[in-house]
Image 1 (cartoon, rainbow, N blue to C red):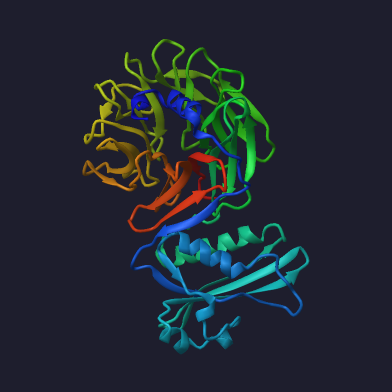
Image 2: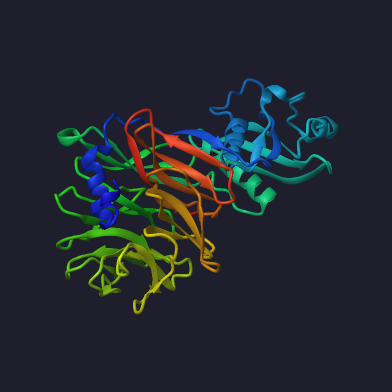
Length: 436
């Protein structure tokens, strides 16, 4: 596959599809397998939530919250079978028991009927101090119970780490099944735990490069449905979509600006592939690079003041940075003979990218202040990295057992998971922004 590594990303992904990246039937949701955790993971007990007599909630709130926290790699939830007691109110809690079991924190809760569905209350305790750290009561419909559990997990995560959780976020990704005339490619969106998958668009032709709007309400993507590349923006709630770029040649790598007003993209309508910026209100198109080399894969800085992109202007694909209005570009990747597909961390202090190491394509994190790259993945063909909106994890596409799957890696090291379908291929993940 390395012989395609210098192609523009839109063509590279088409090659991957044509050589057989989609070979099996798609599954309805992503299955998540935790493949690594942090040794110092925080011990926490999430007791099964109590209920009113005769009430049977549609989901196990404690199990969902525990799974959400476990996937971060930073928490080690206690198995229910090891619990000596199962309190559901503050008065029933004996902190000495939980301390003897080695728990740092305890979560209890109840699910009660409500005119609109259910009322879910929970409390988070510091076991050693015997104090309540947080409590809340939320109202949910039956269909919204999983999302409510995710919100509780995120509140616990933020209280204990000081960092927002991402359980209530979503992931966009591309699936492919079949091959040749039977090829089906879909753009899907699922909850961060793989549940509630929704097909945004399905095509017999390639789809690629999903990119979230900063409000999480729209997706930009590239479609070949009319036998040529075109960029669309689709509203998730209504399904309404708009064609925003269909010029001769390459139309690829869309990326929303942090304020959602502009879309950076790669176009070759004027000759070589260059970076352009489209004002989504006025439809004014501005050319940002003008170079004989291939310039592609733009990504905005969190403050919207600069854009990084991949260019082979120095002889091999590397990461460059320029002002968001265009102008001179400086090379910022200094290690290795291939670096591409970069995007900023939410805090703007580092970027994540695909880097080639001894012939293998891996995910690397480049510290912009120190100029040092640290590897986050171990595969031979890892690609399409995307930061979680809290900056704690990176999701990327990789190969496992000759199939395309997704994987995550903790930026701090140790925590990792694999996301697969029972059949078919999964690739090009994009993590949604935090819900506002």
